[in-house]
Amino acid sequence: MKNFKGAIFDLDGTVIDSMGLWHKVDIAFFENRNMEIPEGYIQAISPLGTYNAAVYTKETYNIKESVEEIIAEWGEIAKNEYSKHVTLKPGAKEYLLRLKEKGVRLSVATASDKELFEGCLKKYGIFDLFDFFVTVNEIGKGKSSPDIYLAAAEKMGVRKEECAVFEDILTALKAAKDAGFYCVGVYDRSSEKDREEIKKISDKFIFDFNEME
Image (cartoon, rainbow, N blue to C red; front, side, top):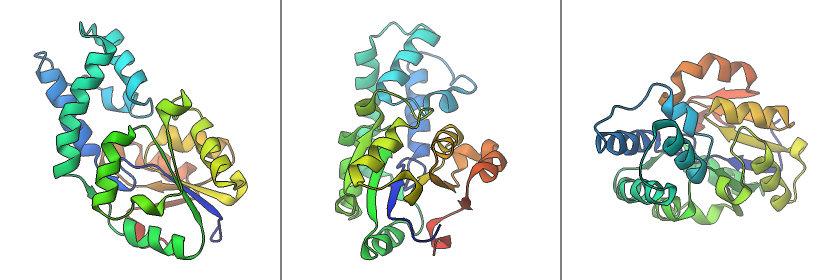
């Protein structure tokens, strides 16, 4: 589907190279409690959104701090990393500019909070390229549900059949694909173990945006 009218982009691991950042956040969080990151933890929380991820973390690992305190701790670590170390994925800005020139409607569907990513997107000059931003916390459901993509498509005024979703997480791609979106799987090293499965369910798989026409 070359001539889609709308494009929905995940941010972390898709447009911005930030999944390593969240790994650093997780390392610091568990180190503060003399713990190592549990196996499968990152995959478990990636689609959830900040609040639900904090609930999961508190309940699963018996963290004494409140959900709000967990979120605040993550936020302080992440803000510093986002402002100093996060970069765009190769070819991302150029591809977004090409889509914008073609009149394609652009939106973000992310599990991150706007206060974290807004400064980063503005720093690299792509914030204003997006027509809409939709977050998991706003929708109230994680990316194992297609609701965030359906909401983004509705905001753009584009039918899902004419809309592409760009994602790096297997769970999210499955939800978007099952809902009827054209899906582009974007490689990220954090999802390496799921790469073959991501390739199978994606309509197109890319290692970076320079591969997009």
